[in-house]
Amino acid sequence: MTEIPDHLLKRAQEAKDKAAAKKAAAGDAPSADAPAGGSESSESDASAGDSRIPAHLLERSKSAKAKKSGAAAGGDAPAGGTATITKTADAPAVAADALPIGAGPGGHTQRLLTVVKSGSIQDVKSKPVDKVHVWPHLLVVEFVAALACTAFVFVFSWLVNAPLLELANFNQTPNPSKAPWYFLGLQELLTMFHPMVAGVTIPGMGIFILILAPYIDKNPSNKPEDRKFAISLMTVHLMFWAVLVIIGSFFRGPGFNFTLPWVDGLFFEL
Amino acid sequence: MAKTMQGSGGIAGKWDDFKGTVQGSQAWSSIFRPGSIFRKGYSDSPRNRSYVVMNSVLYHLHPVKVKRSAVKVSYTLCLGGLSFFLFILLTVTGIFLMFFYRPTAAAAWDDIYALQTSVTFGLLVRNMHRWGAHLMVLSVFLHMARVFYHGAYKAPREFNWVIGVILLTMTLLLSFTGYLLPWDQLALWAVTVGTNMMGYTPVLGSQVRFVLLGGAEIGSNTLLRWYVLHVLFFPFLTVIFMAIHFWRVRKDGGISGPL
Image 1 (cartoon, each protein chain N blue to C red):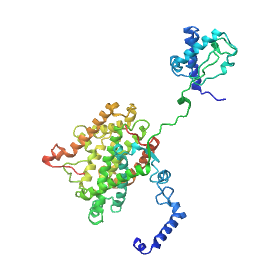
Image 2 (image 1 turned 180 degrees about the vertical axis):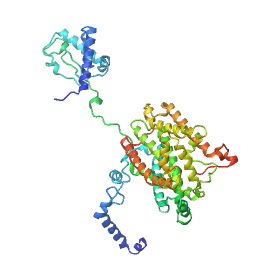
Image 3 (image 1 turned 120 degrees about the horizontal axis):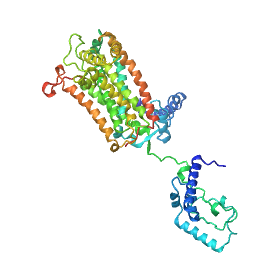
Image 4 (image 1 turned 90 degrees about the vertical axis):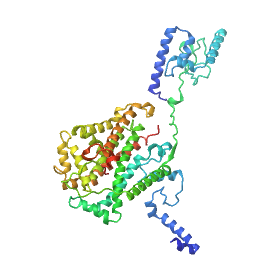
């Protein structure tokens, strides 16, 4: 009726093969057979199956076997042993040694078909996550952040005016001529390298490597202690640009020569 | 209106009746979907809290619920959200500025000057646009750093990181194209320095520079081109990439959890 999933069948087959191999190795000692039956379900080896059946039960079954064989009575053994299924290991495996009718291979009247861990077949729901409603918890935070941002820009704009120099004049190059601040790192590189290297190759490589970062960094962890190399590399990268931008912004004066802002003043417009 | 109501007690009751009639009307309930706080009978229930998000065009980018740890300000510092908010702020102030600006070499500087001196709030709005733009470059950059340091670009969010880097480039281009528009000495020479660098790109460099400048040197054509790039082309692309970016945040499992 019910279909047994492929992976369980495969697992059972593996366990059977293993048990057969073990049996062949250990001769036909009957005691070695019982735990091997229990290991049908275990994904690891037969020794793991051994541990599933408590020792005292094995003892009990052994003594029952001995008693049965001593009495030499086979009439009261349960019929149809192969059809009997003990679902769990804690049901005592009463074995009849006297080979009753319908006994299974090895003379067992009862077989432990499978012990299934609840997680492997049951639909276990994912663990509950501590969640809150977006409204009001997140929307309020977003609203306050937006309000604070607006207030900051408003007050800053009220106090500080945006620069408007004199009308553009092609005949009068200001000294120094500076790019917008976020490109001043590139302009700083321009003092050291050929324009193609400073203006194209280095920033191009920077962007390209940045795009590839998630494909280069295969480390699945996002804990800082596991990603010391990635964090160091990024920090060096960010600091590289930050330092260049700061030098280009504040430490470059007429002729883009090095100056100290506290000596010669600022040559910087936003 | 409230003052006139105080006189007779019956008016307050009539006002409530009137409110009930309006909020119960078909027109009102067709405008405000379930969950709106303007709707009749809004109460603070889990059901209504969900409806607020599901039934609002502004809020439905959010999931109904988020991890408690994800709403901690200390985790994201709101940097991504602030970048988006600054984009909106810049759009609003930018539209205002467009009413007073003509992108020609003859008129541009005079328009900015007139905006500052004779337009009500003109100076303030221009200041907000400029400082907001610088702040946006900064916040996008810091957002990227935050995402990197949290390892939030890792599977399954790799592609959203790529979109993010594109958006960072877009932000820089938006800022840079806007830099020329005041047509003052600062704008002209900053852009000259920037575009000279671009000209050194191998193979296509000088052609790309020619197309962008509308000539061999910066001139009136450049101003018009950069104006169109600044107010239409790059915002258009940015909005598309932002839509993908936000959509992927949801699809990739919400904002990434804390470490």
